[in-house]
Length: 561
Image (cartoon, rainbow, N blue to C red):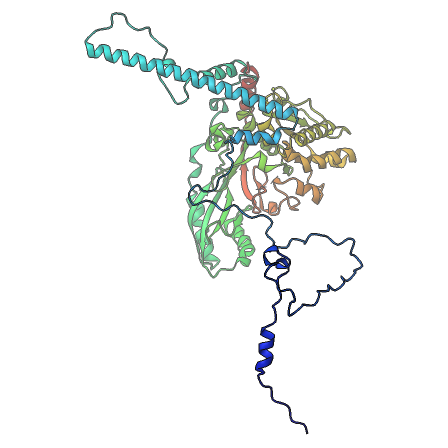
């Protein structure tokens, strides 16, 4: 086994290598300063540097000659600001915001933009002129005030009185001379007013109001009701009474343990005990846990149209297309807006009272709206609604519902309004009238179909199709249908029934239109359903006198000038 030799420091070898000349930097080789100092025979000659041949690549021709910049590459050195002078940059002239804004439209040619710019410049010129006039006026007033103050201070009295000026020139306001322009515009508008100068019919021509003694309860009947509950062994007693003049309601407080499912049995038992043919139990009353016994009065007090008009918001004479039909049992006015009601169905064979519903609606609208805001169209066989065709609100002559082209002109009006609204980029009549001029405004059209059953039984598919289209699209376009369905033996299709959102149904044993009409009394008694509530309201329809109608029509016809 060979032993490894130990490494030792060789001093002679070290000295020999130290004496050798070190490798010189290539730039220092051959310099004229070092030519004399160089020895003639160098002790050590370094080997010549041989560069390894460059490796040829496949893409040598397309290789970029400049190194690609990376995120660490400094593309441009920033300027270092001086501690004394800071960073010297070339001064740029300050530019106005308007100049910068107008640069966007430098190469943009448009007739609309040019017109807007022209109007804006003219407006600015007018404002500048008004400012200059106002400043001159203020200067004159200040000089005049200064002169007066100096005269008062000197004790001199002005011999001649200053000429009287108009009040509008003496006072200074924030608007300044704009007040004159405003006044001139108002005078011009009054001079160019378009439309009839019509006065609304007064309340005094609506006849007499309802008798005031209808609120007094029948004490004998109240005592009978308490005795009947004792005989039936049911804990209950009458605590209050309300009435609208046609129907009286006795509020009864029952024991809390009484079940609601026993209400029909209680109704039948109370009819036998009280000897009443017509009794309706309202369970429960709104806001309480009590029940209400609704009984027709023996001596009813008719609800006149004047009572409905004076007790509702109709007396404010607002242009909101609101109408009143009657009173609820708790003596509240049943009124609703036509724009929310949509299309109205009057269902039931009550010859005198169904016309009262239509009269109440139309008279409510005629009292507060002129012929530019409201139009009325009649589709009926007889002439009972011809009085509404003599007023300026009439849309056209009376048409027959059995005619094949009965609703053709209304459908044409619907299509015209639909195109006009689409061009104006609006969806309803309120938005359209707020955008267009007075001459182009659309009036609300109310179509009265006196006998809907005759139109459906006539086997006229064109008229039925037109009616369905009007019911679907007419409400936002300002076209409303009031249909009177008198033949209860003819059923209405479910689709039509849903399109007629507001329903007023009289006594109907089959409950075809509104559930609960089999408990009503025949005559002036109805259930009303509105789109904003699922619970029907029992109402008593108001009566309209012929003399009241004629006086309203005469005022509308002969007081428009």
